[in-house]
Image (cartoon, rainbow, N blue to C red):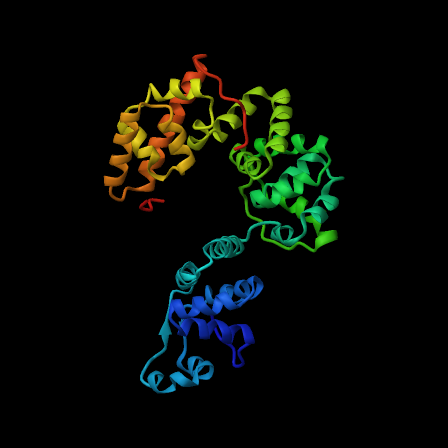
Length: 336
């Protein structure tokens, strides 16, 4: 990024933040509102070098230590990531980073993400279900679920079915959608081909909705495409959901799982899941697993997820064999 002769207020703020430590910058971010953080961070991510004259202009207190320096070379994008990660409000930091990354990549129709879901629904409800599906597939799962809740009930399932069928969308189609919205919103975004929808997107959206709404939508999709509905149900069935099965089904699954896999799978499980599983195995087995968990050192989250998924696969295989029934329901290598 090149600096002009006169810095804007946002540019001065961005330079100031980059001259501070990440923890100091994080403390300042916590005092700003989300719009201010987004505006400043976008500029920070574009900066790779701060000339001495600029740093002197912004930080007179650093004048002495800047005299012999040629400037400050920084990784603006990485600095923003680490600074936001250092903030105490982790949920807010992750949400802001996701928005910044999406914005940097030119996410289509991002203006919709800042509009009240009810207003969005009123703007698009008269559009063809395919158009609505394409629009909603560009939004976050939570925002999409709220918009869907404000659409007519007979439209929801049709839209969700079409989202599941979306793979990649050509720039021309994205352009047509933008033109549809530009009259109302003034949407101006880049035109690059990208992954927009698909079954995974539908699973995430349904997981953000209430159980009744997601169940009704899934039932409607099943009437149109039973295979797709089955695929969605399987993706929505998680390890935690295993513990929600009735006693007979759960015990049938546990008989097929070895103790080592079960112990590893329980490493990150909430107490409610552990308690339910311990109640369905012998007291001695439960005690041994608890002892092993206490003695177990840090393990990779990916290893835990593999163990959990292996149990989910056993459950799905048993269902295919007719040995139990799984009711349809809505739902990195960190050390844990």
